[in-house]
Structures are given as C-alpha cells and as structure tokens.
Length: 280
Ligand code: NAP
Image (cartoon, rainbow, N blue to C red):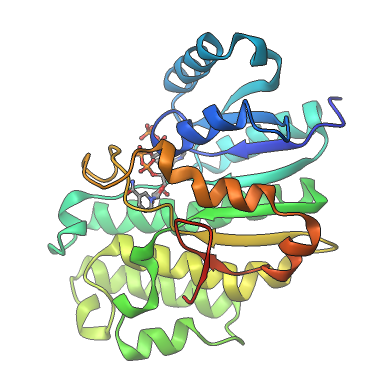
C-alpha cells in the first residue's frame, strides 16, 4: 500500500487539458501521486512514457491505468486496482469529455451524438464518480471539468427552472435526462426549451448534479466542484480557442490547492477559468 502522499486521479488524460494537468501535477508543490487514466491503453501508455521522458525524476509518482468512463467493466477493473494499490484516493478530476463539432454549431444531432455526448459527459462522469466514492478519502475532492457551455443561460426558462431547483432529486434529474435524450433523437428538444447543442445540455445536467445531488451524497469533509477551463486549443475544440491546454488547468489546480476550510466554503460551487466562483 502506498501512503502519505495525496493520490490524484485524472480521467481522459492521454491528451489535451487532462494531459497538461498531469504534466503540471508532477512538479506541483503538493508532491502528489498522479494516476493518469485513458480509455485507450496504448494512448495512455504513450502519454505516461512522454511524461516520464520530460520528468525522469518524477517517474515513481506517475501511474497509468486504463479507464473508459462509459464502460462499467472498465470502471470496476480500475476501482479494484485502485483499492489494491492505494486503498483510498484524495482527488478525482473528471476531465474526460466529448464534443462533436456539428453539435457545437447547433446542427440537428444524430442519435450517436445524443447518446455519446450524454453518455460520456453526464452518465459516464456520474457513474465513475459514484462507483469510486467509497474509496474517496474523508477530506477528498471531486472536481468536474465542465464548461461555460453548461451555464443555465443557454437553456430555456422551464429548463433553467428545473435545473436550478435546490430540491431536485437524482431520480428526477435522471428521468429528465432520459426524456431529453429521446427528444434529442427526434430532434424535438429545442421545442422543449433545451439548448440545440447536446454538449451544452450534457454539461448543464452535470453542473446540476454537482450542485444539488453529489454535494448531498458526500460525507465527512468531502467536497465537490465544477468548473469551466476556458476555451483551449485541443482536439475537442477543433483546435480553436484563446488558450493552450496548459493554460486550461488554472481553475483545476486552484481547486486542488484549496485547504479544508476553503474547500468547505466553496463546496458545490461552479468556477470560471480563473478560479472565481460564478453563478450557474
Ligand atoms: P480532448 O483533447 O479531446 O481530450 C478529451 C479526453 O477525454 C481524451 O483523452 C479522450 O480520450 C477522453 N475521453 C473521451 N471519452 C472518454 C471515455 N468514454 N472514457 C475516458 N476518456 C474519454 O479535449 P479537452 O479540450 O482536453 O477536454 C477536456 C475537458 O475539458 C472535457 O470535459 C471538455 O468538455 C472540457 N472543456 C474543454 C474546453 C476546450 O476549449 N477545449 C472548453 C470547456 C470545457 P481519446 O483520446 O481516447 O478520445
């Protein structure tokens, strides 16, 4: 069992913002053990190799394990390995995400776009979080790399009202997500007040989950946050944006560095790309 150092897990870390985050964590003053995860074994191993070449002296702190957040078996295997090798973990950065360019351009979604976008950015992110929760340290943190596209102003009034209800239950949120998926497949979701883009919808649902559901599921001194990394040049953004992936880690690193008192003060909040609390 490896103890005494914080253990940080980053999902979708073979490239983009997740990779940049692992890179920066390897020289972070907290001196954490960092678990780079990727759904593709080869991509993940190559990313690890690249980082070890860059930081040879940090080799012992970097781990890789396969993790596809939409595959239950993969989540189970990862969790088993995590428990056997670390016992518990301190921080989960849910960074893995997808976006289709046509969806971001508000074109009518295909069934694949609806299923994969909701399946990854909402259902998969929730599933991996809840599956790993029993291993989260008593003062552990869950950090969601969400998006400003998930802000409520992208939604119609009724959807805004639904997602901002403090008494929203997990069952209600999931039932609404299912309904949204079915509407999306028929391209009828806009008529029901949803944003045309499923990327935006998936992140809005994720934010509501953090704000009203996850925050109530946590125990002891555990906390959770959601954030916008800013518009970064990565595959997901179609290589557009005003920031590099390295610059997209500011908010996440800020939240990782919060002490217990600050973490509890900001529990369940949404952060902008500079680490400021913003409204949903
Ligand atoms: P990226 O370069 O495309 O990286 C996305 C990562 O997620 C990749 O490693 C990808 O793996 C992984 N992934 C996708 N589906 C997965 C699954 N089912 N299981 C595990 N990993 C999976 O994108 P990025 O820009 O760095 O995005 C990182 C996060 O930032 C996303 O959540 C995104 O929504 C958010 N974000 C990005 C921007 C931006 O401007 N870039 C803005 C706001 C928010 P593969 O390589 O195998 O596809």
